[in-house]
Image (cartoon, rainbow, N blue to C red; front, side, top):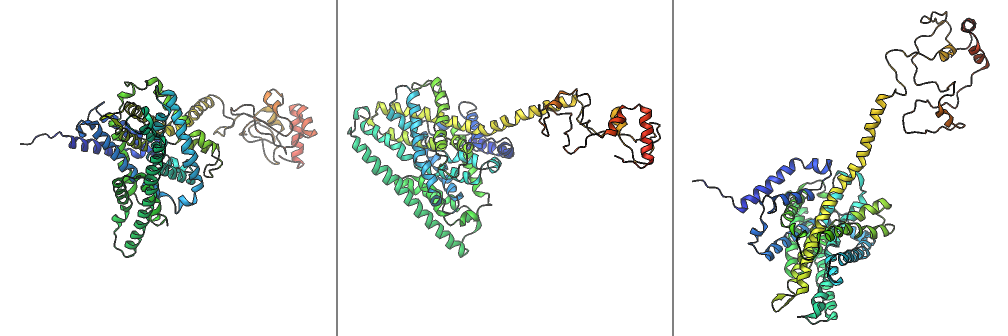
Amino acid sequence: MPTLAVVNFNIVCATLGGFITLFGLVSYLMKEKFYLSEALISLVAGLIFSPHATNLLRPQQYALGDVETLNTITLYFTRLVLGVQLVLAGVQLPSKYLKKEWKSLALLLGPGMTVMWIFTSLLVFALVPHISFIQALAVGACVTPTDPVLSNSIVKGKFADKNIPKELQKIIIAESGANDGLGYPFLFLPLYLIQHTGYGGLGQDNSTANAVGAWFAETWCYTIILSIVYGAVVGWIAKELLHWAEARKYIDRESFLVFAITLALFIVGTVGMIGSDDVLACFIAGNTFTWDDWFRLETMDDSFQPTIDMLLNVSVFIWFGAVCPWSEFVHNSVIPIYRLIPLGILVLLLRRPPIVFAMRKQIHQIDGKRQALYVGFFGPIGVSAVFYLYITLDFLRNITVDGEIRPDAQFLMEVTNIVVWFLCICSIVIHGLSVPVGKLGFYLPRTISNALSTDRNSEEPAPFHIGETAFTSEPDVDQTLRRRPGTSDTNNGGTGGLSQVRPIGRSIIDRNNSNPALHAQRGNDTFVLSNAPSNLATPDRNSRAPSPDEISMKSMPQTEQSAQQTTKNSSGGPSL
């Protein structure tokens, strides 16, 4: 007998599949017309599906009610997404890009990341109660790297193609890929100091020298340098193997296209097993893999990699919406909401824009102040921040005294969890809405102005008009017009006449000088006093002044003018 099986697996498949299918139906409209990022839309969807709303996604149940297991799931999910994203980011860059643009990257990754780290840490130290500066440095390090997933929303698509130069897009991709892996030194320096010297060194050796030594040996040598070497070697070997297989026609098209993604999975797994920096290794491997630009050019027009990229992005931000501690932003014991909101705003305004603006002349890809402000503002906080958040929580959980987490480590865990999640949500929302709000702010005043101008012009006479019926001419102008010889004035009953006159515009000379706008003309120059449409024609600098005969004719009675005009026409006088 058929039975309902409303279990978590079926619910997750139906929810994710249904949302991605419905979103796909309007994806072009949302991303290319309304300029909404898929990260923002997916985050909102995750919140709707979460236990805070419809309860279709239940992360706590998937983790069997264990918070540490849930944190581990989120950490591994972010590792997977970052690994694939960074290999693809490395593949997108042109041949030998890291070598050619090392000066610009050195500025962004050296002084740039350092100032971002210090500024963010100072803001955390100022606004979070009872936190030490060393602890604030650990929190600031989590949000120092820019996110490659969110950066794709501003370097891809119609808006980027129209508004962002290609060289600027490339440097944003390269920076966001490299600084994700280079966040380890900024994070582990304060973490090692907290471990060895925090809380009076309780349970540890209370030695700053040991903390700095561990930072150099484990972070720089084993984590950073080893991951760079490993990524370069694996990327080069993969490139040579793919060349060899393609030259002998051993590989089919499908396997060729998926090669970069499987390479990312391999690096994430192997580097993760040795405990090094898999994020940085993936980016270095992707760039080395396309060092000769062959693979990038071969897959440039293919949509398989962007499709996988989109599926991962949508899935991870739905998961973020479901696991984010929304209620703790208001109900927590470490920072009140009236401090948390200013912290989010100030971090986005001061974390990155000042240093990028200051270095704009040394980075040749940034042309002018507007581009510097754009690059400075769009340094999003996203998947990489959540990744470093759970790296931090995992490290602090091991600082124990008598089997219990040390109090200073426990306090820092709670602060980091709330602050990093809140900054991540602020960045996703603000950076996701910046482009559509900016577009709205640009077009809305213009649209209103055009509408008001159209209404105003519809009530006033047009400056000129060519209609089906003739307009009545000004009498003093008509009487001075000269007629061609042999024509007859049938309309006016004269001996020689004019056909219907259809004036275009108005007379350029006001005989009564009653229009004050004409007094604005000086010499041969004319300027407009108002933005409103003018009824005055522009004077012709080569126009001829009236002759004495014309002036004398104007002073004659009407009958004498007609007689004299008839005499001139019969004698073959000049005509106009």
